Amino acid sequence: QVQLVESGGALVQAGGSLRLSCAASGNIFGHNTMGWYRQAPGKQRELVAAMYSSGDTNYAASMKGRFTISRDNAKNMVYLQMNSLKSEDTAIYYCSYSAGFYFATSPSYWGQGTQVTVSS
Image (cartoon, rainbow, N blue to C red; front, side, top):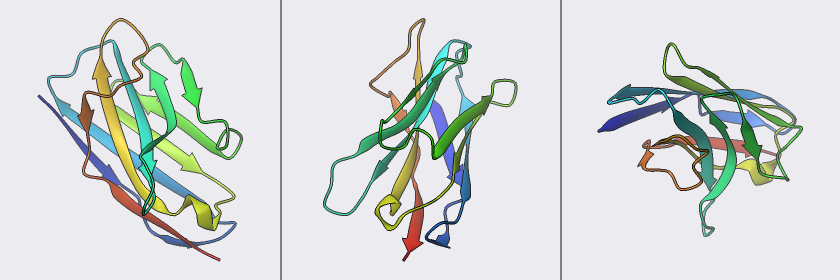
């Protein structure tokens, strides 16, 4: 089992920045994919960005350039730096984790989510 705990969600004005953090604990495998997804009201959960333990990344096209994913493998942490926030970025942001010798696209574990609200 793996536990994921997100933090950093907040109410922020449009144009502002936020940094989300996620701490993973439990049975962590050295080769893994950690990432961020989000779900806005009435919409499906969507990929924001993911990062393999080797450093490879995958971003949703609409967020590349504004959002940056990073991780600290030694601490089992993943971060999401969000800049130039827009009202449409308002959503619950979920941390994800998958173990394996490949870049996973279907997370095995999810965090509880952290609310990001962008006011216009």
